Amino acid sequence: MHLRYSFRVEPTPGQRIALARTFGCARVVFNDALAARKAAWKADRSRIATGALAKRVITDAKKTPERAWLAEVSVDALQSCLRDLDAAYANFFASVSGKRRGRRLGLPVFKSKKDNRQSVRFSKNGFRLRDNGRLNLAKIGDVRVRWSRPLPAAPSSVTVVRDPAGRYFASFVVEVASEPLGPVTAEVGIDLGLTRYAVLSDGRVIDNPRFLRRAERKLRKAQQDLSRKAEGSANRAKARLRVARAHARVADARRDWCHQTTSRLIHDNQAVYLEDLSVSGLARTRLAKSVHDAAWGMFRRVLEDKAARAGRYVGVVSRWLPSSQTCSVCWVVDGKKPLHVRTWRCGGCGTEHDRDLNASRVVLAAGQAERLNAPGGPASPGVEIPRQARPVERGTHPQAQPMHRQPDGNRRPWGGEDVKCAPDQK
Image (cartoon, rainbow, N blue to C red; front, side, top):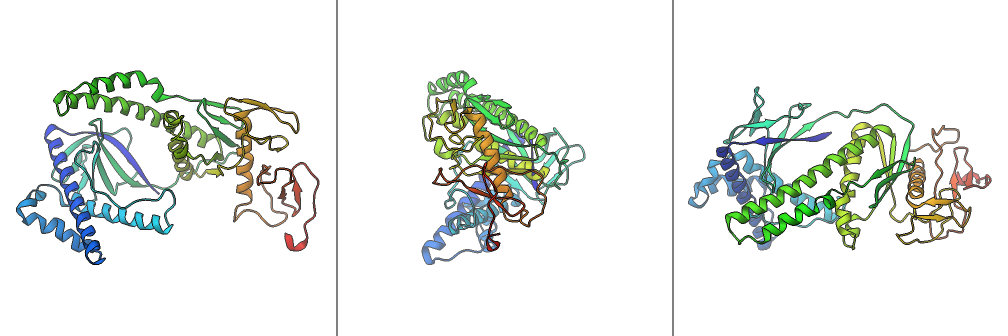
């Protein structure tokens, strides 16, 4: 698998000028290539080949007075822009045809020099690692790198990024082998929330750190100071940088906390089950700021990435699962409850539940049931299943007794007696 290792770099003032020149040339080449392809498609619905496009916007453009300054930067960085454009078009067509999962992507758009984040990528021909630990970039020089850990293998490419806070990073792409952890028997379901960040099915609680809320006062003061500065002035540029650095500290703290928390979960559990939350939908409600501060999407993405490398399993149950309405003891759906109701008593068995703890146990049972019944799982009678899952009630008829296929071939209602299946139903 391919992983990214990001390190802080410290270019000299002259190297910063060279990097700014490289950022600008890469942006111009990308915009010229995009404009050429749009014009060709508008003219006769044709597509310009990548080789011909590179010759037009790089090789031939260097010979013109208007683009002669393209020769001052590495051609490897300019060619990477064309590969990025090809990838953007490929992702768009894959998204339109349904081959790419997730939110539908749009067509590539032109890049702006006013963007606060700038980046450029170098392939193997455009960089090398010196023996003294410096990163040599073509036509830029040896850049100092803050190595926090060694690279596990030789990198295939490096992306130099300048973030809105004015910091420079080098992001290396490295191919590494998976490192499976030793098997454990524990499995856990997680109910994500805002009051408490996560409640685990074993009773543990992860508090919500609320990084943005804790830094709101400093952010407000910095933003007020920025709003008082004149447009285009040097003082406004300095104030904008202070605001960006304040937001960067919040983002860095949130990212570090997310990595540490997910690492502990992956290390302690063989399988982790989550609910498929509609983060984009919740971010349009009155809870938007808290939802963005919680960063559930980043938490799930990091958890899945770490599980893939460690040989663990992450299951995601349907967002329509009534986890807050279903009793984890008798599996009776007790109806909707407003958010201020944190404890409730089941009308079927009389058990009093903590709302979040009960939901995490329902998520655990649902995830185990879906994993057990997934294609490729044990289906033949007599096959040993290490841990029998207890599913939850789903569907539009809560009064019905849903059946679950057991390893012996029978179908058993939750809490009921065995019901023999006909031979053609097994």
